[in-house]
Image (tube, rainbow, N blue to C red; front, side, top):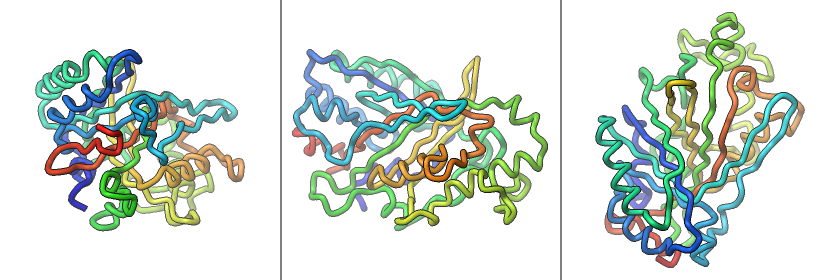
Length: 293
């Protein structure tokens, strides 16, 4: 599908920066989005629109709704809605910083930059725990089928929904676990990435086996590690033609179905949770027609 933002289907870059914006109620978001459309190419800058902005423009996106929150014994899964999200992809951190400045200027005064997260590719695509990330990601036509909206009309087809969570790892706790306990928490061997046949029901791979849901819960993951001076973890990014697959995965992880909590929660926690609608492309530009822009 040629009208999906191309950076969504591309492999994760060496470096990335995630920008989260809030909106100014008295300002016109339409004009700011028009300026954003001239700066964002869908490849080095992927754009996601929050439900509040679509509502502010009088054009709510039917498939976009509030992020689910959970409170489970010992931890919370928070919902942190935001107006606008940009995923900057590149190879040079200085370039990402300058792009951040240009985007912030283009979006002012309708949007205010609240938060930035700097991310990076670790090895050939590993989480900071050392395990490969995205092993069972769909590829090729299956990736497009999992990620892209289809059959909803010219202004919607090629768009996608994205779930974004920032997870904070306790690597000291993880590294205190034995190698066997680590493998059982993930459900794969770190040494060769082979899935364990004797993994416990709480193993992450068993909790989130996408083909085990009815219907299957396939999403296109584009997660990347992040770190700052005080903490580190993973920015989980999952694109889907709808939000239903992600919500099925998350519900099973927190044990909503059977009371079995994903073993990931023994050493990592999400501190944010947001949904966005990523518009399609048209003639090489972001297509905001579904928002009336």
